[in-house]
Amino acid sequence: MNPSVKARHIMKIDKPLIIVFENEEEVQTHLYPGERSYQQYGILVADLVRHAANAFKVHENHIWNGWIRNAIIKRVLLWKSNSTNSAP
Image 1 (cartoon, rainbow, N blue to C red):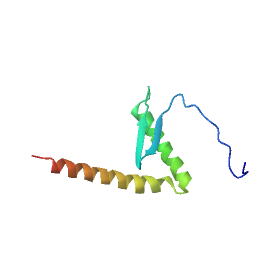
Image 2: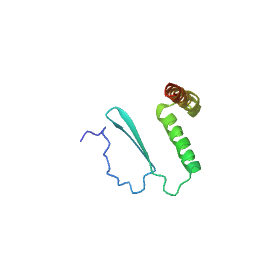
Image 3: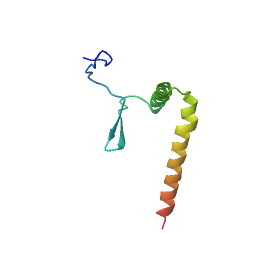
Image 4: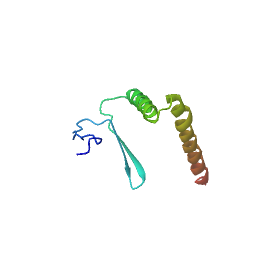
């Protein structure tokens, strides 16, 4: 085995919280809240943003104020556009 390739370990996930994967160029997200509240999931999302910032070597505020803010604005505009177009 190539020494630069890390060995992979098979892991069984008994209690998933969030599973995200790409399927035919579409991102699929599945939440498994169980007994958790939406506040606890909010903390989980914030932690995920922190990990994304570390992975891309940017400050987490860059993600909150850039990527997430822009994505929310686009979704709101799309929602407004769709609700206006479907009005009688």
